[in-house]
Image (cartoon, rainbow, N blue to C red; front, side):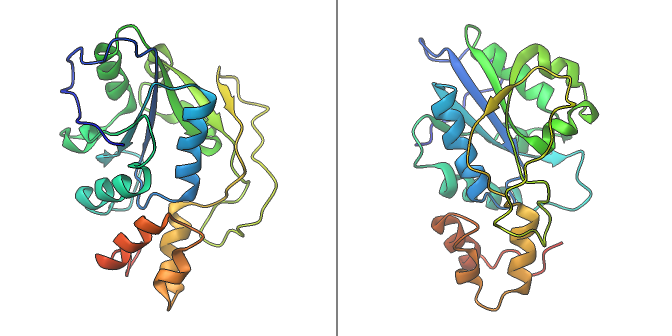
Length: 224
């Protein structure tokens, strides 16, 4: 279920909201691992609301993202039926690069009494100290991390069972326990490029509604 977005900076958090999840990403496209991670975070962290935030201008990505309106629409298809979710477009509406520290600062003002949880995959945790203003991120939110397979590239097998090693990470975080899904948006785009039967190729990679949207709008025919 989606809800209207609050204006940044306003204390719009409803009374009684104590635990707020923040799940950002390019979502280009959103896939089954994203969906499962959202479900896991809501259940295990007992979230009152989970903000799904498609990235605007991604400072850390070299490739050009798909148009923002498509990525927002696909997020609506992927997560819109999940209770407690809110598709939050603030980052694509923000001028300049999207920084998580800015988003968390805004949400902390909107939910002044709540605890914020930043939802991450293990690959993001391993690169966390490369983030812009990462100490500020830790000031605002608790990291909640789900493991991923050791290889999640375009040619990754879907049945891997070896997880990324987080033993050397010296940052505070909570572990999310979810089935290992080594699907990545890179792999989805690559498989679409290789596949003749586009709709059928998407069945195990993205939710059905997202697959229909991709096919209807002829997305990723020349993925990068």
